[in-house]
Image (cartoon, rainbow, N blue to C red; front, side, top):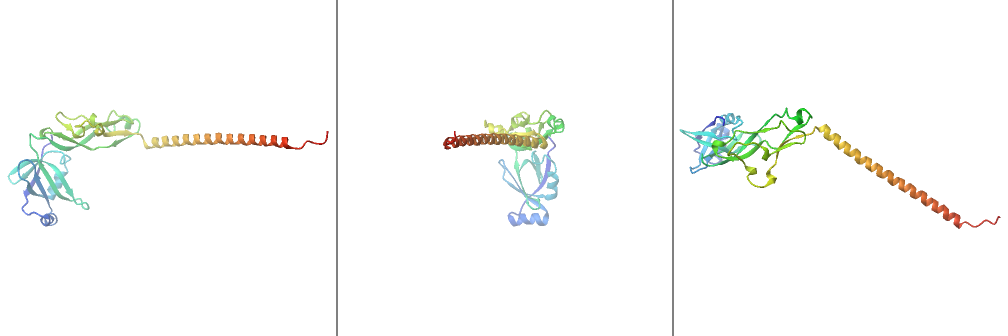
Length: 249
């Protein structure tokens, strides 16, 4: 496990929307809350710049953090983070306390390996399609992995890797696979054919369809022509039969 990130915070004294708005706009602070376990919730205020710096670590959202409030420090995970949709500025953050003897559910990032060396990519010119970039796992805090590796090296075009094929550490459970529902064993990533090859297959399919239509049209035309000639012959026969006999011998 990576070194724990330390978040410095202060106890927030003023509550309410007006106070939170003032913290964001005038002091460049972020209101937050620390809750969970048997202890009371603690309203927090954090420096926005310090929080952004901590968030640059890729493990910020998937690892156990240490929140320091005054002289005390508590282990937490990020439970929720809100941003301003226009400016992307963090407007609020929730921290959940973790307890050593209680399992937690956390979204862990996937780290894809050997993508460029993948047979389907390097040899056949295919490309990698990522269906998931993180998965939710359940485990005790001490067993929480920093990431899950996904080895793409042996995949050919058309191959894929599903959740059940991932290798996870002992005592770590993929939440989606905790039930017997096979529909939750979704595809994580796969190798798809080059676009040009797909287009050529589509063109070939269209040409085969055109050939079949043309052949059917020709057969239909031939049958129509034969029917017309047959009808003409019958009309000639009827005409000869109905003509008056000649008086000349």
